[in-house]
Length: 171
Image 1 (cartoon, one colour):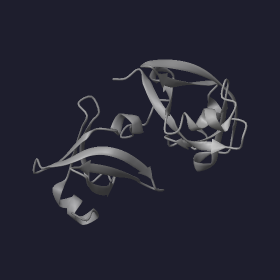
Image 2 (cartoon, one colour; image 1 turned 90 degrees about the horizontal axis):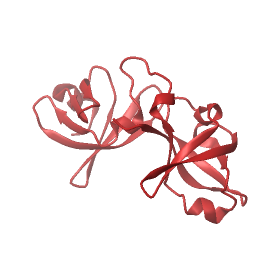
Image 3 (cartoon, helix red, strand yellow; image 1 turned 180 degrees about the vertical axis):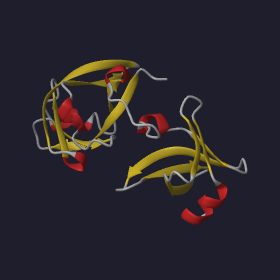
Image 4 (cartoon, helix red, strand yellow; image 1 turned 120 degrees about the vertical axis):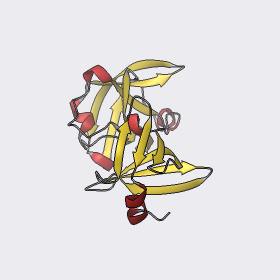
């Protein structure tokens, strides 16, 4: 397991003074309000950055970090992930998973057909929607308990019920 968890992603600049519009990768829309610092991955090393201020929440989160002073600084960070140490993360209820742990998981159905790998998790209200990609083809399906037979984060493997999948996805 990784020692760090992705909790957000830099989307684009906000204003001219280094504001960063952030995509929150958490079930907690106000995720960044609880943090005093985050980490960025630079040259294969996690670099701690102090949070100056946070406004908004969810899709409207704007983050200001020490050392990030301009639109150009933010442009250079576009699509970068922001992390916290796993040891400092809030514990999750049983059956819930960190999005960053789901990313890259291989997805098989109960007939052992490989469907691809998770490339995105969309938080669409009551249930997350997993985006699975294989050979350029995209498959979307909801993360329903009756669909998810096995979620093995350690081995990066998810098994879905083939019959239920036919009901909830266009396959």
